Length: 99
Image (cartoon, rainbow, N blue to C red):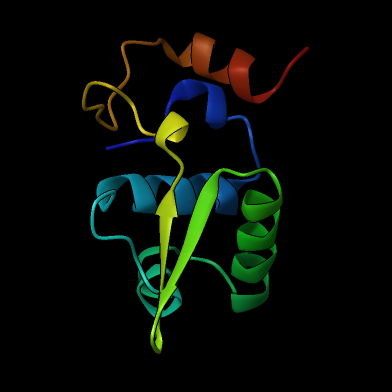
């Protein structure tokens, strides 16, 4: 599943983190699990997590020695989404590269 469209206009690593977390909304993910799920350098991942935390898009829950990261409810779509959009390549390019 993917994060809501309104949260996809962010840095690539941030979007990848949100998408990974949306897939595991109920369970959350540890930093190690996120590191395995998101193809990014550790510094980029740390920066993305800090930015998402500052923007209140993720929740960090600590219980004992375990820390789990979960997406904020507003990031999770009401209906499942897939990687395939109904958008054309032109729409995608316009979204990614504003003219």
